[in-house]
Image (cartoon, rainbow, N blue to C red):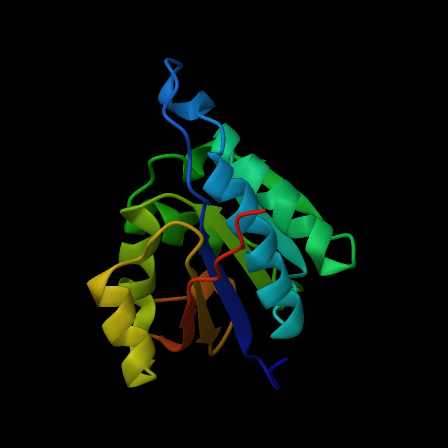
Length: 174
């Protein structure tokens, strides 16, 4: 992981959702989402990006994404299903992150666009050039951004983090 006071924020956009005639917050994952979410979990495990805590939107598609990611991690991770993450702006997401207990070293946040993409761009004062370019261009479903945060969650400010990874794991259609 990281040394000293540094922390890691892993921002995940939920996997691809279906569009049945239900309330937006109750939209389930589409078949592609059910293939991609486990691929995201495998990437997180292989990249040693397993969180100490997950803050997951309360929307069905986000909860289903987490359930499929979690199976691939090989460990049990505590999860908070947070209604404030549904439809949240970057500023609102940052507010939730600032409330995370200090002992959490790696936080995974599972949410929705445009908020999650805007949060990554808001926080990324430094970045691997490719990761930043990709994040600015598009933050598709199942995208994962990894940011190194220099200090406590409570004092996280815009531009203070370093974007180290941006990937979009894709699963195979069985």
